[in-house]
Image 1 (cartoon, rainbow, N blue to C red):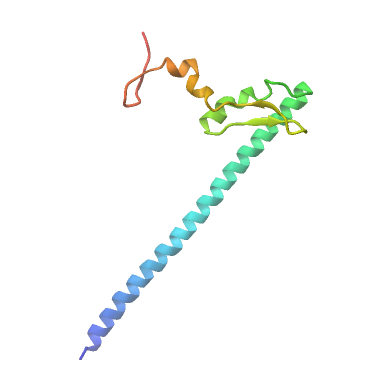
Image 2: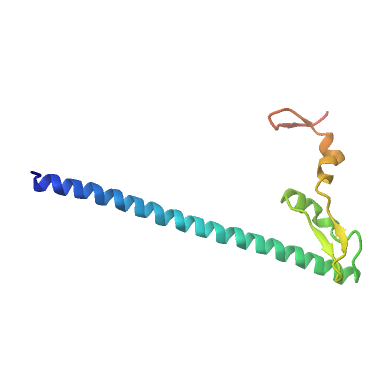
Length: 122
């Protein structure tokens, strides 16, 4: 037969464990939700910045050209995405080639060691 002390101890441990699991679940769900909202917000801001850049280029030049998006190339490569500008007939006007970054002259000529430390020539 179990004593009241033992029953209360078991009940306390079970309730504590259940509370820890529930708190962990709610914190995890909240963090994931907030992080997803943050990522969506960041992506929407990037989209808006790209669209406003192309709007400014069109206002400045009055037309699309093959060099319309050159200024965004570096940001796109560093952000790991490629941009392509289409006209109203869905024909590409300007676009990025993802293989260009690999063949860029300045990336091939960097002196590096295997640990990612960069040195300059003197």
